[in-house]
Image 1 (cartoon, helix red, strand yellow):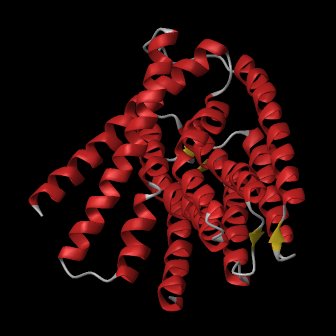
Image 2 (tube, helix red, strand yellow):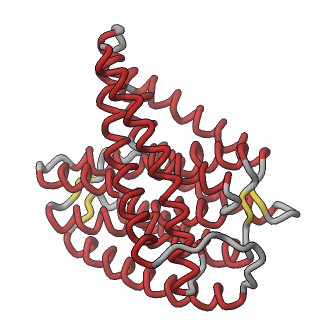
Length: 313
């Protein structure tokens, strides 16, 4: 048990340190190549923090287990907005730009609704998988071009420490590695400790594993918010959710058609409601930010959904 405690703390340390250097490295790259931190959050950070979900879902597709792929992505997307953005908004207000209100969040909402409509058909076949991947490619291209224009329009107000291009990339790679491997180390040893203390598999699944697999997104957002880089935090969540739907379902569906019959109306309603709530709070705020009221509302929605899952299983 002592070894598990030590390894759990090592894993947590890797996650914390990894998120710190990832945020600094990503911000440095954004400044060097002239695109906004929001887009860096979508393209680089969002993809990196979605790697655990990608591995789990692709493995599930290879094994022919559609429920694993489907549950992993939908659960992650709901948790990302309601729990992670909720906690981040309570910790530090997240600034919302005009583009976030009129383009970024509405696009995520449309992609989420599109996924739900496809899921209602009962399967994500290879044709739909190719369609998801095509939309994903267009989404990346659009954001890269939009990010260039947005960065050019923003005047740098704060002088930040500059890193060389090589060191910035190394910080991103090292930060992502710390997040992913540290998160895995944390989850595995937390589960070991929970079993040793007599916790049930059900309790472990809805607590430790749910939180543990989202540690990369959680720590990245909290650190970004603490460094006053709310756009990087928001971009991380929006990007991660888009990657989860379009890229992960696209790849998984190509490997093996995904049966979506386990995706019920409660799951569907919750995943759409989470993005809709983000859209409403983003547009309703007079200060153009997600603050404590939004964060508390998100957390309450997540608690209700977690109670439903606990009672269901």
